Image (cartoon, rainbow, N blue to C red):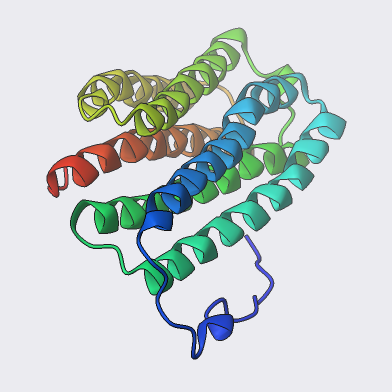
Length: 229
């Protein structure tokens, strides 16, 4: 991902006295709303991107790839908002953990968007409609479950469900298993080297998206207890 070099978000704060704490909760709630909005852009694109990939629909894939720029911009803005919030409000204890966790979640969303973009870009050198049905079904399942896990992580954050991470970690084992199944099929199949490498990367992209969803859920436990799961 390429980012434009932003203006210094702290420049406007020079010489400004710290603000009172009544605005802290409102500011953190706004961060949550923005995090949910940008995360929805990612989760809502996983299904269409998977379908576009499997059908070889380069036009739809290109549109979804281009839409990743909006995700990049929103994540950068939210990140800067979190930095400014720390500078202005000086949160402590649980409030500080919450802001730090939001910044970590932003990175998970950002990386997930980038991984999904890579799925679409893979159509430049692979033609999925020509793959055997078993491989295509495995890719479809990877897309479906990774979307469920990513959405589950975001839902856990919004509801502050500190126990959701354990459930999502169990479900994440399915993604790991599907990745192994796909790799085994590639080793024993008749795909070209280019196809095999591309599909192995595709499996890795989906596996990492699922992991980012689990990591978002883990941040809730960090906010509540101060411990990293």
